Amino acid sequence: MRKTIFIKNALILTASSLVLRFAGIIFKVWLAALIGSEGIGLYQLIFSVYLLASTFASSGICTAVTRLTAEELALGSKKGTLKIFRRSAEITLFIALISAALVFFGADIIAVQLLGDVRAVPALKILPLSLPFMGISSCLRGYFIARRKITPNAVSQLFEQAVRIILIVVLVGRFHSKGLAACCAAVIFGDVAAEIFSFLMLTLVWLNDKRKLSSLSGRERPPYGIVRRILHISMPITSGRYLNTALRTAENILVPKNLAKYPFSGSSSLSQFGMIKGMALPVLFFPSTLLNSISTLLIPEMSEASARGRDGLVSSATRNILKLTAVMSFIFGAIFFVGGREIGLLIYKSEDVGWLLRALAPIVPLMYLDSVSDGILKGLDQQAFSFRTAVSDSGLRIILILILLPVFGLKGFIWIMYFSNFLTCALNVGRLLKVSRAKLYFLSEIILPLASALCVTLLADTLLRLLGNIENLVYIILLSLVSLSLYALLIFLFGIVKPSDLKDFIKK
Image (cartoon, rainbow, N blue to C red):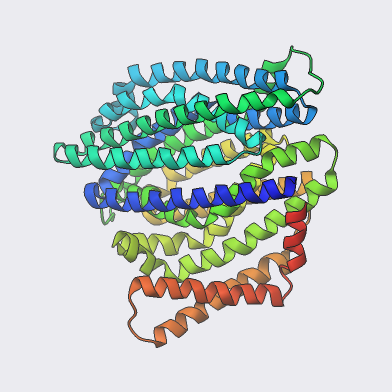
């Protein structure tokens, strides 16, 4: 039964995430065409503040609710389950209101002194309205993950995205003539309205679901210590995310400023920043949907297995997910490297974005492995390690931005991304292998699939070039299909991934 639920939830979460990411990319293409890369750059600056405030508001609470609710459900305690949720909601609401007040009353200072762009003020006045709703929604999502009920989260996010896009399209279309400040405010207003709508949906589902907890009749833990248990999990995650997000916000502010100091910059620094953060990176992360879904669902599973002392299950599951991530990320990284120019031209009609996709393609495996391993580490109570890693990485990035960008410009920032992703991936994967006692074989599970991915993609590209001029869309589809087919054949022939591996992973 547990296996069936996990597979069903993974499919639901993956399908909804694919739709959300695809819709997000289409929306970004439309928005970029309307307000340009400079407008996208300004929006990314404002969104950095949004992320900083929302990180503080949600207080790392989703992971805490997921883990503690999963433990209470394992004990069969209805009262304990509801107490965890209520205390978590009270904590996050209190923090969210403080965060909202700080951003609203400090909007002018943030825009002028930190972002260096007064056009951000209207958007910064609007975004705090979403923070209390975002915080409670985070608690609700953590609860449903622990209940192994992904459908409410998936459906609410789909409707949230639909509301966001519809409102933004209408509002930006109306306020486009009034400049970038009005456009960014309209986008943020759409984000706020979508968060409120999602909160209302999740609340209605939760009110119905909590009635079903009446069937639980297990022993209840002592009532004291709930807040301490919540904070034990959420505070390291919150501290890490908040400090990391604060440093990333500082990074996002410093990148355009230091790119502007480079004497040979071909376009405005804000446009270059927008192309990297708002256009290239969302495309590179698009194929990781399945992996992120699995790592999200593994948090309660890993917590429960670790709590019950099932070390063998933790080790085998970790090994399989890391191997699956490596195998998938290599082929997608190779496709972006070989076909990046055509993908950039197709999606954004921009050779500059195509160049960025090719330049960043080699770090795709590092980004995917880092993201998945970081999620699993949190399920194994390693959030303190994730905190130290994130803070160290962000601090180093800021130092390197100040040193390299004025001298090397955009290429310097790409070098920083290579260094940063290699560092965090090595630390997180190394720590995960140590605490889970899993093993990866470097030659057969890293080098061989990497070489196979590059070879089949270059072969597919060569064959397609022989056919003459092909439309970009047709080229990308054929490149992906031929490369993926040949790659799948090779990894099974070489025994990199065996049918028994997939069956074993699903079974456990």
